[in-house]
Length: 223
Length: 48
Length: 236
Image (tube, rainbow over all chains, first blue to last red; front, top):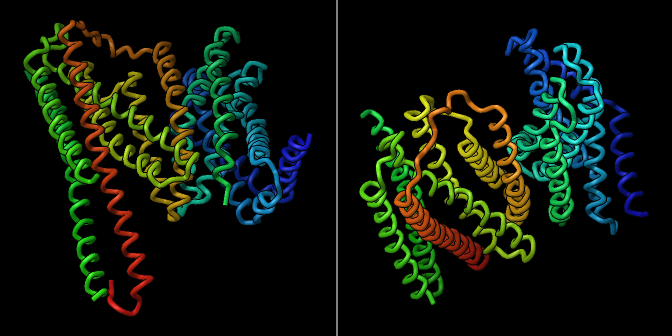
């Protein structure tokens, strides 16, 4: 399947390029840890308050770190001119989108791999359960998808990186609310069935966002 | 009842915002039409 | 053709003025005094009507975005940006009047009540859309990119609505106890007239905004024409 090979090639290219310098990932990681600290100090997160606030703090941090990574990866794309090369070839535009989005998803996943255990320890909440991991995955997929689409838009503007959070955050609200509520429910001892409504919302959000992004991405990169 | 202050304020907001929107469009339209007229006149002049 | 358009414009202005005045009359003279909240409840009619326009206008922008991507004609872009400007004004009305209503009824200027919250989200989306347009220079790119943003943003609004509503059902505000409203048929009629009036108002103002944008385009074209054909002659 040529399509899948192209998607995979793009993912590999992006991940390899990042692995070379690890500049962006380290920035995202350091930022995330700092964000956790700032939240802890600012909201005075100790004991029961910390446990209650943990899902929200986690997702807020993921959201902000995500915008860092998304901007960075698209800016780099523009600088190297890689995408222009890809566009010259008769490649399905959605393959390019999926490749980029999966790459961004991978970067966010790396950050979350550090963030989850760290938050678990810091706030004394059991985040490393399969339910929570599923929620994290679903939430991140939607965020990476819409983020990639919007980063492609933002990178064309005069304001560049600054534009992305403004465009992205209002659109990420359904996903963020659902992820925080589902995580909170699970962490308090609930079952997956109990947070089923939120899970369904996450899935619907992901499907809708991916569908719209795949349909419209081509229009963003046409010349 | 002091509550009526809020009622009044709310309707004042409605009028104010509608007014601002309408006047802003109208003012911009007038400015544009003036510029269009002067440019059209300039065109007439150059054609002679 | 132009005369017909002007006539229609005038007709709409008259109709919407009459409709708004009629609605206003009904709100203050026909609609009954609400039992729990008193007269302050009368904010409801224009608050809901402005919310209707605020959200409908963005739906129009969503459709125009699709139109632009499909046919790449300037008129779709004009419709999109015009609807955003008008919609932004109305959703601002919704949020402010909602806040002013919340204060006497719930004792606080802001409550995370689902309808108020989603209106605030829509407002932020309008602002983001506007900022995006301002940050783009090339007119073709501006039209194309904002069309895509309008489409994606719009599809998230119903999802945000559900998310916020469920969130508030699970965690209701302890403060929002006294928010019930006894709805009577007279209130229903008043609301309907208000909705109709605001829709007329929206269409009227929208047409004026579209006309403004067309004039701006005409000016730009005239300028370009003069510059290419009369360089070295007059300074425009």
